[in-house]
Figure 1 (cartoon, helix red, strand yellow):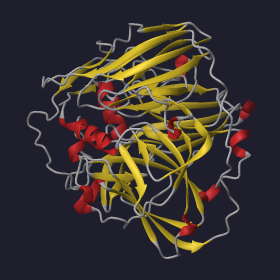
Figure 2 (figure 1 turned 45 degrees about the vertical axis):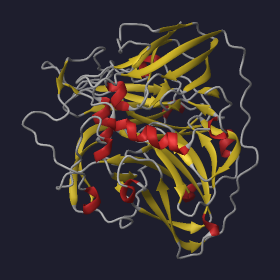
Figure 3 (figure 1 turned 30 degrees about the vertical axis):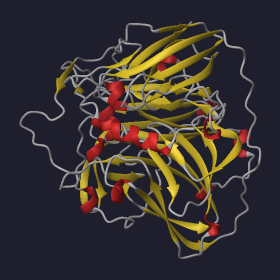
Length: 507
């Protein structure tokens, strides 16, 4: 287990050790009108801009804390999308990426990038064995790419960083949903632009269920809440301020797109599907009174057995599925969900949201002692090592590297034989900067962390795993679904945007 001191020290180093460069994709001048499946493999060129562009003054500290009273706004729930067609046993959705203005802070509309205009992003509810098709139309003024994070999908629907939807074009993504239940999410993945695009709002939930999960008596319906957590920085007009490598100034904590909201709950059990959708921030979550939190799932769905804890740690891109029983509180009580991870003033980043217990309610739900059975892992066919590192020497344009190389979309870094299983030892070679590691296409199992068995929170299926400075994680994956090229990378999005990404080819 990682000590709280090490976790906090690593979080402080996230923004203090490396000044990153902002790289923005520019749309090509000769874009054609919208059409089906229109995309450019390598997309348009890009230009570099400094973290604080010349002639553009820094807006100063985050104005969010003084513009938004804590626990004064109700937390919204993300809208659930309805399919435009269900013909042939396939659910088809039409989604549009566009720029809209929404009042994140009270009375101050902010410019955001949104799927179907929703901030926070919408929810797609899917079922294993029933395919989903999503037609994504890009009405932004720059290219985008949509990645379904944690999903097993064909390579042409994975949302490759260089397979872009040009401005004004449409691309169709096909998701077979031939994997078991999981709390997935979708977000922009256009290389060099993913950091700013996700920060400005291009993220949404994709909740995949199956018969195993549906048969359990877990809290459901109005008692099942998807909650996306992140940080943000605002200027005095309530607009989002984006700078790469800026966690010290992002001191407004958002839950489902609202600052420090309140959540009215009944005195009964709730299921909370927590997502860390931040670019860089790590969260260490607990109830202010130290009350129990029952973790029932992680990235790839339910754990085999529930894990009762008082703390849930999430690095960017990770998910935790938890149950909290509010019947232990009297009606009229409020309990705050806190965060122990800097950087930022504890009075701001140390609080996330408040649960207000407003009524009694009948509760037929329960958390079974056994949630699912995971298949045994096969004997691995080969082992690999992967080393994550970012320059820490103070250079103005630091590199993000995997195995000493920055991302090259034309290079295959790992050639994998289809149908085999591999063990990867992933190491963070940095002294001060934390990372995490995300594999596309597969859910993996964590075998060891720093030579020791993983904790119960990492005992299930995972697609993203944290790596504090100097840490190593051994993981095992089975590559028996789709063939093709897929990325693997650090999911601190500023790091992947600066090149901390590689590519595997399954054949």
